[in-house]
Image (cartoon, rainbow, N blue to C red; front, side):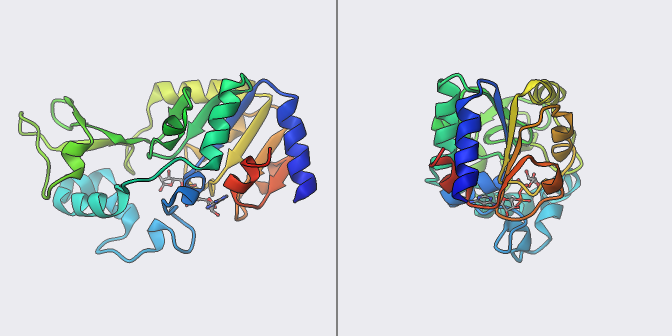
Length: 238
Ligand code: APR
């Protein structure tokens, strides 16, 4: 591991155009379970499969059950950015990292101080009315019981991309541009299972693709440097 860390440290030292692409594995060291690991959200027993609950059609059909899941599983109080979030924010401040592109909805990159964060799947910290689109603070959804409603009568929903929903065109376009022009693309804490997010890395044209992930991914063979270690540990040493 030491020689790989040294290699990554050298690559980072020599570049001023790094882009980071991350997933739920970046936040596990902050106490937020990921989705597909053994103890991940999708392997926990719930009334319906979590992937079903986190879909547009389920939200429309049974908002009551969605909000039971949301308050129990998605809202985790007191979580803090970890060493990976903090080092990425520092690399941006040093002018080395151009963008964080994340599949996460927890807002921890911004909490760590990152400014240019592209949230492919939105954020659980924002909410809006599904009928009139009036914005609401997240507390409106997270506190109390039952289905939160807007003054217009519409259901208030989180500003996240549910299954069956499209990603934001502008965020996709900007993410592709950063990845296409990146000198180094560092991918971390993601199983690269979910499209179109995972497909974005095909736009990378450089020869410094770094993959930092505890388990193997379908893209391991494309990486120029693979580190199968905890990402917080790795970033604390580069
Ligand atoms: N350090 C490095 N890797 C880690 C760590 C860690 N501390 N903890 C977990 N991992 C790895 C796991 O081995 C796993 O391969 O992170 C990966 C997380 O993968 P998933 O749980 O599939 O999460 P993610 O890739 O972000 O899922 C993508 O799926 O359901 C959708 O919208 C949801 O954004 C999510 C998307």
